[in-house]
Length: 87
Image (cartoon, rainbow, N blue to C red; front, side):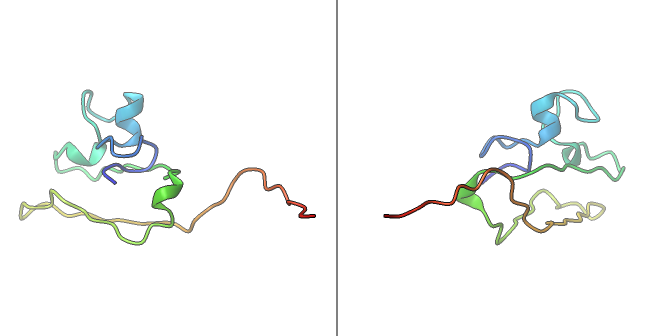
């Protein structure tokens, strides 16, 4: 999967890129701006094929001055659960 939460699966984007709200226009993610400012990208992952998250690969941290911080929060479940009655 090549996206962060809030963006379509395999879009190589983050929520701000999809919404056109990144801190610098025309970017797919805030974390790709590379201007020596701490920035964040966040959102929910909702493609059930990739849940629960078991591994995260972070790339493009190749400069001596580039660092990354990552937090994966606990899974939250939403929606309607219907109890099925079997006869």
